[in-house]
Amino acid sequence: MMASARILQVGIASEPDVVTVRQRARQIAGLLGYGVQDQVRIATAVSEVARCAYAHQSGGRAAFAVDQDQLRVTISADGASRQPQAAAELKSVSITARRLMDDCSVAADAAPGLRVELGK
Image (cartoon, rainbow, N blue to C red; front, top):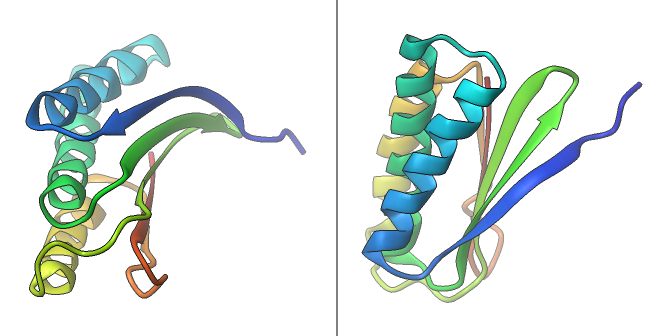
C-alpha cells in the first residue's frame, strides 16, 4: 500500500490566495493526467471550499497530495470562526463539492476550525 505523497501546500489568507489555490488545483490535475472537464471540476470544487474557508475562518491552507493514483486535497482552517453562518455555508459548499468530486468529507465540528478532504 502506497502512502500519500504531498505535492504542495498553499496558505489561504487573502482573496488572491483563493485564486492561487484554484489555479494550482487545475495545474496539478492537468499534470496528473486528468481531462479538461475533470480539471475544471476539481478546480471549481477546491476553490469553492477554499473561498468558504477564507470567508469564515482564519488560518486556512490547502494541501495537495496523491494517494493511490487519486488526487487528494485537504482544505483546513484552524482559526476561530469569523461568522456564525459558517457551518451552514460550508454544508452548502460541500454538497456542490460532492457533486464535482469522487470523495468529500467535512469535519466542521473540530473546534476551532474546519477540515474538508476532497478526492478525485
